[in-house]
Image 1: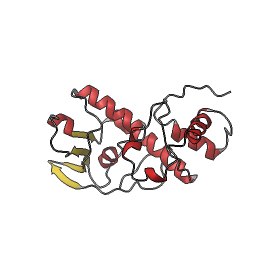
Image 2: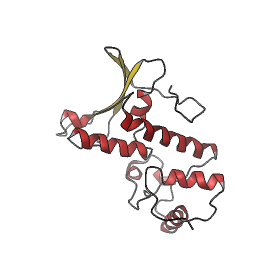
Image 3: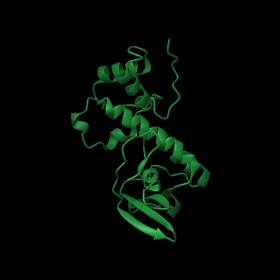
Image 4: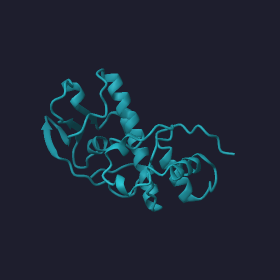
Length: 190
């Protein structure tokens, strides 16, 4: 488990593997899909990972890096999909416990998600707040039950999330904060 500043409950998780690299506990999550970050330079890889964490994606490695009981920890993704020409650098993403680039975006994402859950919020994120189609919909396990193909529902959901109706209601505010998580809100509230 991990403690996250501003979140009263423990963040529980289960790693696929735990290794020791000297004094560092390395908690590993194996992935069988295509790597979400394919940049080949370290600065670009770190920037891409930070953005995904800030948007509430790829949170496991950051959670693992905050593992309780370890003096030093690292969270790591290892992408195992065979047959591709990815270099080893692309197959691995990691987050160190003391890496400031990831700590605050991770904590903010977890606080936002927990607040939404406390209000019982669960809505399909059919597109990103910036208007792009959500990539995760392409491999969703419950896509058949989703209204993503309903263009009127999609339009109305996006319009409502971008609007100001209901602002000040804690549930509405939590929903919109989750929708805009990791994005700069482009529409000014009246």
